[in-house]
Image (cartoon, rainbow, N blue to C red; front, side):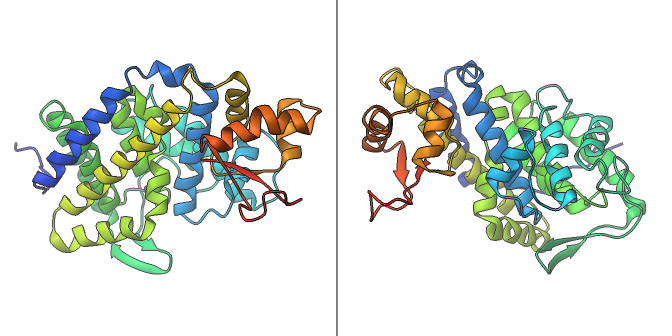
Length: 330
């Protein structure tokens, strides 16, 4: 019996971007660099979770998502708070789950949708569609076809592993999964997590890269790529979109790595370790986090050097001495 082969063509554009990605991965010499920086690993994981949930209309801010994960009291819809807890547990499985196992997929979906979805961890029983806000991009295949379609997809992946580059294979999976839409809810979250799982098996550094953040920033283009593939009958444009976002995410990773090199003073390293990316902090909040008592010490040894190196920026750059001044790690 022939194995189902998802329709796609490896283009020159794909080959070029894969080459760029490989070069950048080479500069991240060992993923244990991320292992040795728990704050960086945690920051990126939180950004991944926030972005993936935000794509699905979860309204909690990055700071609120961090608060939920840290066990703090957060005011918000209970379902959205539970989604954060579930996503955190699901992402913690990356590195141990088997991305070629259909049973693991159902198990992780059960974690991702715990207490939020009636059909948790099982394939959908009714019709579903893919929506960008209120816009229906397409209607998914009938529910009765889902088990066979998913079996075919995972069988293809197992046969294609080793023959097709993981960057392409994982992107094809992402698109095909969204097309099949196997669950009643959580399909987008699972597709993004599972691509990360596939990439992490190839190179563990992907456990710590917030690809979802780039997708969130280009959410309309993400859905346009999906929609375009439905019309074209193959996933080429979506593969190119994902390769582009992975490439951009690696640019961020290289910036993060360079910002933690030995040339940074102990003070600046402590400052960066206390700040989440893209979250504004007042001087008082930073002093509390660093257990400092002197604003002069904060300014001289922490804030000013970090500003000069471009590692942080002012939230109110036109008024550097403003009482409402904040600082943001970039």
